[in-house]
Image 1 (tube, one colour):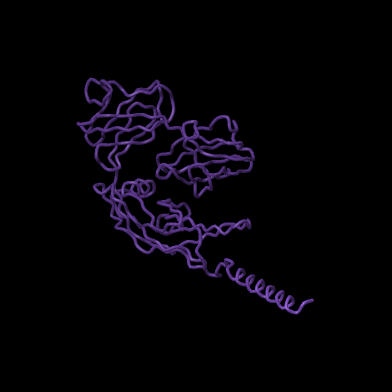
Image 2: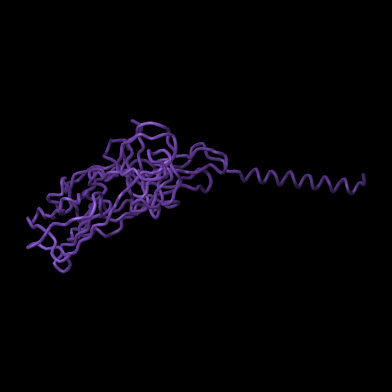
Length: 335
């Protein structure tokens, strides 16, 4: 072989070896003890109705596994000492540790598990789910921040009770400004009125508007769940009732992908619930028998148009919590 050609081939071989070493050095290696996320800054948590539209910002630090990681972050709360066995999801973010929520929305979430108008001791944490798949099939890694224990005072909400609707239910005003809303179960054969228990005022309907005298009950054309809005301010006196059916659908459900299994709203927990038998297959959640709004993904991170959730056969109780109208979480418990 020509001596020059031989030397040239050796040089190419060495370049290839060194280049391969460089690429090996670029491989992502997770630290044995990654730096977990932390809660760095907390907002003032004495919640006031007059500041209901204000945005609270919880500042955290990201998980650091030794490289720039792709992770989702979840701000969670529970009663002090509960060890997050049944946490309240306050806010979530993708690649974002500035977790935000309005005062009124936070107050509404905490009212599900804490008393109003007194200080409660609450544990907070940030939980991160880091994707390390990269085509390897590896399971996501979960890291949680140290617990921050805080005192939070929440406020009770003004309400309107539904009279003669067939069940005890109410709608509430998150800002105390005379504007109320809530999910209610209505019967087409039971016209109802709204009562403000603080003022003992009853509202019916006259000429399409809320009225306190010479009024008839509010009514709907068909049975089911509705999102009821009412504005009792004298300058408005308006109301609306829009069908709001959350359904479970999929190959695992009794009717497959043909029709939904209707869920019921639990005002205490703020979740939509159903208990039913499922076969092995897939499920999703959708609104009003349509696909314009549907949630899928993973139980702790449901998003619009997310992937189907896979279940095995069995009897299940499923609870869906909707967050900010467009995302959510769910619990899928086999009985």
